[in-house]
Amino acid sequence: MDAHDGRRDPDSALILEGIRALHDRLSELEHRVVPGERPGFGGHPGPGFTPAWKRPTAGEARWQVTVAVAVAVALQFRLPGGLVLLHPVWLLPALEGLLLVILVTANPHRINTESRALRLLSLTLAALLSLANAGSVARLVVGLVQGTEGNTAGPLLVAGGSIWLTNVIVFALWYWEFDRGGPVARANAVRAYPDFQFVQMVAPQLAPPDWEPSFGDYLYLSFTNAAAFSPTDVLPMSRWAKMGMTAQAAVSIVTVALVVARAVNILK
Figure (tube, helix red, strand yellow):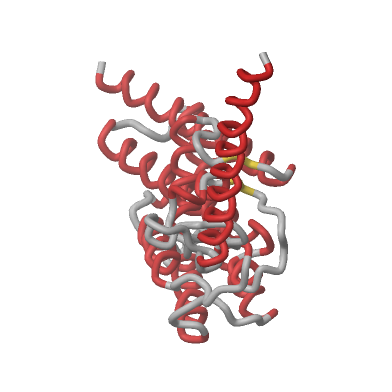
């Protein structure tokens, strides 16, 4: 037995020496890696990496939200006079367009300028869009219930679709305006905890190192919530986010259900 144990000791020593050598080699390679990068993964997150949505950045481009708001303003001109909250029908869209022009002129490229005046104008624009669309939804629901709206299927579907799509853009604006304090606060990394959890936040290795949420992500969130009536792959984290998504789903359900039901009855 002693001879046998004697034969095993050198083998064990060699194995331990190999393990130590491998450990030292791995440690050396780890120290040579540039912080925030991982060899062979094209600069994807590594040890010590801070994702873009957690650190100060240059801010997101203005064009996405500008195009979306312009579409929402244009959709209001497609509504029948009976569904418009204020008359003349061009009054609210013109005021909304004016606010949009002021915002784009003051900050045309990237949304990273800290200004209470611009913040107030941006929230006012979102509020006007919400007010106009809420009035249209209310008038549409009352008209469908009383039978004064939706006498022909085509115009009814166009009006209902315009209101539904405007609802998507409006709630996307609110999500975008308040998630972690708004676009400027996100660019400056003022708040650490997100109100909405995107997939890229929990799986940074599946996204570019410079990924951060922009208006397009919130538009997708709003569309999927309005279509599925529930969260999909973006989860609300704060209470206001949950209540906002609940309100949007409720408006979407009422609009779709009444418009589709009335259109089906007309077509029959």
